[in-house]
Image (cartoon, rainbow, N blue to C red; front, side):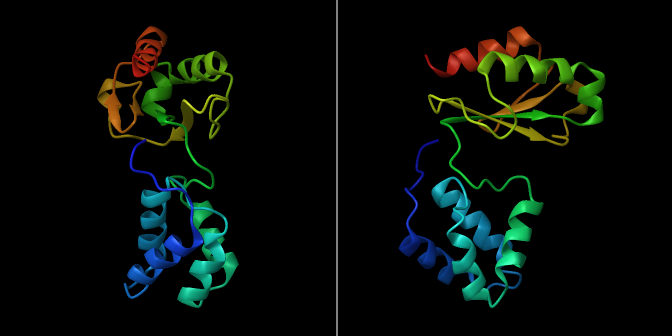
Length: 157
């Protein structure tokens, strides 16, 4: 993931100040912070709460409600595996288990070398080509264990 800045409270404050005038500014701020840093650092909660006159619980509740917000940096590559019904009907559960076992990580974890983060998603809208995934936001369809392994191995070449 290129273009990601190292967490900085001063930079976060700039981002928050640039978005806080928007109606319903919490989500735009969270998206902007995640875009800049690759995640929403827990230190941002009080910065957002103070800027928007919200409680820390309200900000934390928003972050934890939306699964796309991360509270720690992701790996260099992010694999999002669809867990919706169509994908499950086409063997996604076994595919997910294969990925978790092969890389020794669970949902929301990153491999020890920082190469891959595994995240669940609920419906990518690719039901006709299930099981599906996103690898660094690139859609992958009709996945098998061999196809997903080849895609991941191809990242390091």
